Length: 337
Image (tube, rainbow, N blue to C red):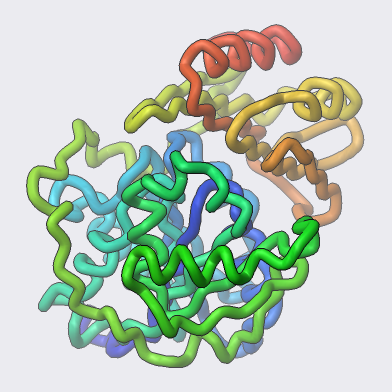
């Protein structure tokens, strides 16, 4: 990485389903055409749906690398460092965006980026924390350590989904930030995932955060899992993950598999899960699905091509996760290859 110096780097963090991928898509659409941008994505699940949702042709000078399987900062940051080094060497980017999982520990991500061997390589700019203020009505979220950390490291808070609020909840957010000892933080509102790209430019005030969480934070994480999992030639592969009371199930399906559009809508729409993402080859074309807060959004024009079909959902109830898994497998006749 001798030729890569002081790459402006932003962390874009926030809870599950808050709209991180949508916001990054919006930023990519506003990217100066002459610049190369790199995106490092961490998903709690294992099948890597976000990479497909963010995928752009290389001619757009956008490069994506995924670290599936939960917390990319675990095992002393090694999975993250391997993926990051690969991405930097491949892209030689003018800007780096990092999207940690909504269930991870963003303080450790920031700490890894601040280590000595990255100090000449990365220029840590503002960390944007996205929040759906309605989450603060849930005591479980208010006490959730990663959720608190997301706000504690924020240089700028971005309020998403405000068009769904029935009242002004900004005082609720201000009170919570005071409660966790993080006051005076600027707040902006995203409209349909769009923000002013200038928010990326300011320098982070929290570059060298220390964290107590770094003590003993080890998971059984196979380094090989940072490599993309290839689709089978026929059928599908099912991959599971669980940690900290959350459960994910995902499927990677052969390129020859075709999904029925109506069956997809009928199956996904009523699901009561924390979130679901899918990129599917259907009888009506490539279909991108995003289920959050009980609302399913579908886009048929975002992707021109897909090498395979991928489905993944996250649930915080084990029995419900098992039942949802069975329902999806039954609806689409998914079997392990």
